[in-house]
Length: 509
Image 1: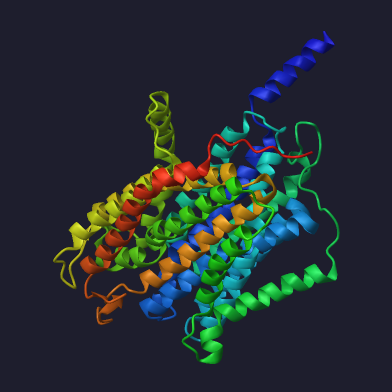
Image 2 (image 1 turned 60 degrees about the horizontal axis):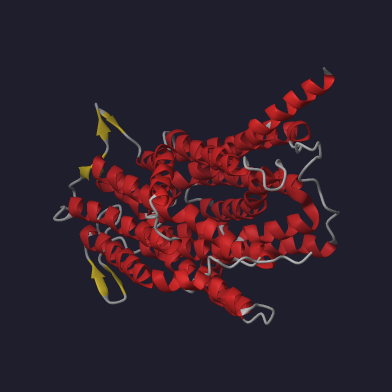
């Protein structure tokens, strides 16, 4: 009788998910609420409250989102060596909450000292994200035994938490004055942090009964110095132009330089075999094309938010929708369309018609170009004071979401398959480095948007291409991402051969 009860419990445990998954889901949902709530109003805050020019605000936006993708390398290293997942998440969550409160004080101060408070807030959020982001995802996998079939569905559930937080945060933070929006983002982060501290001992337990994510060992002086030094360096880079009265964008040199240096360092490793070099080279080539995708896609928080604010008709039944609300379209579309895309890939796979990873990523690039075709049609011939229907912009975001589902999860899966086991973490970090470069590139491209709050910003140019109106601005993204899609599709057969999908790596004991 006793054995039957035990077997029943075991079956139930293996068929469902541990409570720890939903606990991490809740924590991550509030962290994403905080991040995306702030991101939804950030560029509007800089142009409307701090009275920055569009170009300056766009460059700062790109620097901020670019550095957000770099600091997880530091946070992941310190977690593995010293802190453990739990302590890293607590440190990261606290720093991000403090950063949001600095943003609240910045919005309250306005042009009287608000810029310096903003630098302090951004620095805190960037460093905090580095500790938080790579560690909470890692803990999801630690809840399950090795090779457990439920891990894929666990990450799907966890991904829904990310998109749920990203969906309702712009609706809340964007519906009020900027300072209260930042305050809501800070409070949201505190809710997730307090919940994590309160429930970690109870819920963060594997099915074998082991506590997961515990500290490895105490921090040494060198590592503490590394954290303090990183905070100082990031603050200095963000504030470099103001402190030294210089036009040099030091963050661009830092991010793009790292993007060039990492492939050289990795591919010159003499321990790599010929097949490993070819497979790694595929990752680097695709990472290069990914920069063009995210450079166009991430206009959502930059130039497209300015476009939504100034030249999009947002009135519904006498109520004017805040411009930030459009940033909720993407996560809502992800939640709605992700299951459909999974069914489509499964349908094609069963008929041996499923595209390879490079072809799927080329399709993603093509769809981001198509999204800009839609908005270019809408703005062609548009006068300075005229506005387009909001449905054109919503259509762009839905098309871009389909493109994201073709590229983003495929890319992450491809890196995990192609990277040698001994270099898997480093290669994943390098893949996110491409995202850092893409976000910085997105800020640079957003700075090219013509006009301004008063419509007197004048023309801009990119590599000799003059941009005098919104139609020409959006044409730039069509040409850039469309050309990248065509080239990647042309190279895909060659890349497939270099992937060596029939190769099985043997990991020595």
